[in-house]
Image 1: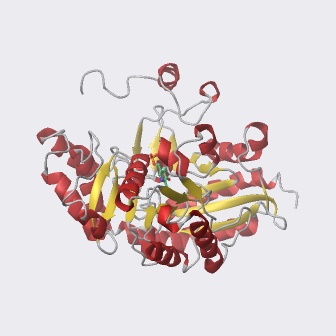
Image 2: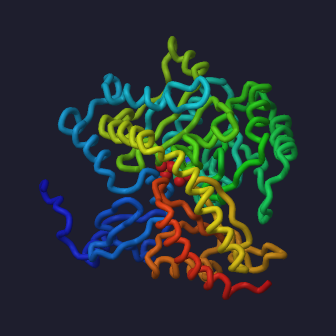
Image 3: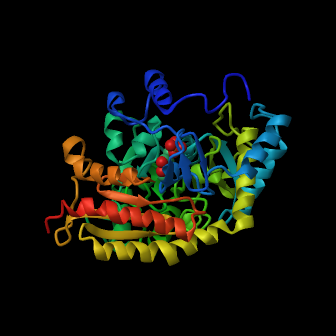
Length: 449
Ligand SMILES: Cc1ncc(COP(=O)(O)O)c(C=O)c1O
């Protein structure tokens, strides 16, 4: 093993202490966290240094779509690393070209060019810049029920409360209505939601608006599936006014919803798509902006105004090429769709029937949310909007009950998301749902309906 990198040399306590002493953790009061140390991972399982197994019902922030520890990806990275580790992005490499081609094969419509970044937020930053440069307009429309990343532009586009600490952020960002009203299970009818967008476009002046940004299916903020006709309508409004439609598929892309991209459910082709996470299951940092032919062609004769030292990094590209091949060879997109339809949907419906605190379950593929309420009739959420501290107590108890039983969940506001790797087996889903079944008894104890 390499210089000072031999794994297994430290105990759990030493690992946690060293992490806490010298490193910062995201979104947290540093003194209040008690991280779990992870030593290795395989499939849907994480292992602590003392060998405890944890079922990853979160795919590590909805990233590890092909599962952990796939040695074929490791081999592809290793093979590339022995040959060429890094060249700056002005050079052409075989692996970068091959990844571009592989993406073009699976992309919707006339999209077959990509600008590589290192993750989701950087993809958003570059999409903002590109939309403004291409249209010569400044304003960007975005929604409240949205997370787009933690860099300055992406944070300003983000609607959820993580934006507040970063304000005022970029100028020229304007909100338009979400497809779902707060606390309501059903989306607004497509025509009504579209009318809200059209009004904002009118009031702001279409000629001032560069782009509409949206998560095709909202992820962190609730697995909100748009009504049929909505994305088609956004496309039509954008076309009518020369505004770019930018779909953020950082979370929803690469099989998570049971299609390669979430836009495929409605046959809509945006002008730009941002992606990251599932493209290579996070084995190395990688993201990108997919650019329509029409936009890309205008940069044949004028410079593209963007660049990143690690754009097209050979090792990251190798991991993504291998990952997409694995997706295809194993039919992982189809598996995600089937496991959603045949196992997760009926399993969650059973939980909803059994537990009064389950106000609603919704989702598709391996992208599901359980909405927890205090009262089914009023739909009062189990914890208030953006609850923290004692107010968040009931949700923290539910999460703790999952963790005690060996399940790593994703929780946000009053929701538990069921978002395992796309490769999860039916037996593993059932194992996870039976732990959730026990944990939901904790939520039921706060039910007052
Ligand atoms: C839809 C969406 N966009 C962008 C991002 C930001 O990605 P990253 O954390 O890689 O910067 C995320 C992260 O969760 C996301 O879910």
